[in-house]
Image (cartoon, rainbow, N blue to C red; front, top):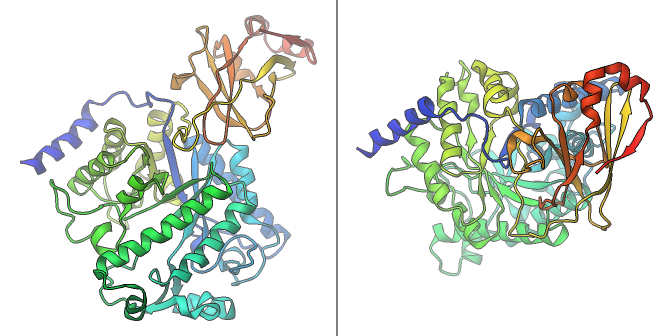
Length: 509
């Protein structure tokens, strides 16, 4: 009976839910952008100045499309398989950048990605593949730069692939150094741990020596879970010590364990790969989970509900397997993903993440159009991380405008503070502007203390505007109201008035 009930619930969300745009202005909307093998990026190799330019332009084009679709977070693959896409003192450059393992691409791709994401108001989280090192071919390409050569004591060969050994405490140190290098050197918004678990069905994983040394007569399955949790705890606390506003997340297996409602059919995080992910939320050593819920029907809904019921005040954002829409994969109907989006919203989960970016931007079965025109028609901001800090900054001050040949520029003064802030722009036909309404949100993030509106905004009859200051934790100030009655005049007289008033400046209230 329960199985039929969940199927009925899924159909209900598809057929009766007409409130497609988000009611709340807060919703995490993420995409996994894979750099391994250039699967999402890059298609072009950085072997010359023109190659670098094409590689950078390709990433910018993808980020433009991500923003236009209505997303706000990019999970950017930074550590791949024992190699990275930034200049590191620990691991070599990935071959995906230049075609050659260890070769420098001539620029810093991570720094470039950070700057370009922030220009577009997008958060960027450094996606770090943690435990896997790579298959035999990948390790051979790394040569003497591979961790298997530098630190063989923490590496294990299992089924023709290499892994860090979670049971060895030196693995904690190695991963902590990588995370510290990334968090310390880059203005990222989050670190995202992938494969922070044992290999699948690893009953024969060769860690007998490690267990004998460190297991202390524990149950071996629980010892393995404790190992993964120990690593997570270390990486979380060291990240927060460096930059407490950086979000810590991971992508566990999509089914935590068997629930009272449904069996996981022999595939779950807790028992099969030793991820006690709900315990990480309960202990407070994670800010976000992006469980890989690449399932249909009753393999999705009851397990998504289980995550929702065990959030412990943190965020859970289901990862949706949109690659299964592809005819060469499982050829899912797009209605399956539509139902899942409705379900995540109506059950109180914190957003959606899409695996992976190529499939998202390919508009498989019209999904991207549906997101852009229906679900994500209004922008959404990442919610504030109030468990870390809940004090809002002071509001901006001294609102001004400058009319331009094409548009109007708003200006304001930043609050007096040493902390880094960014700003949100709102507009409405009602005064004062209600900043809690998603439809009033114009721009979720701009780092500058000015913002230019092109004429199309003016013709939309948005009579009232406001600006808020937002700190790195997402806390938002009270709004600075920017009541601009001149917009009515400009709208009546058209662009000629804008040209005549070029350079004209007026203080406003």
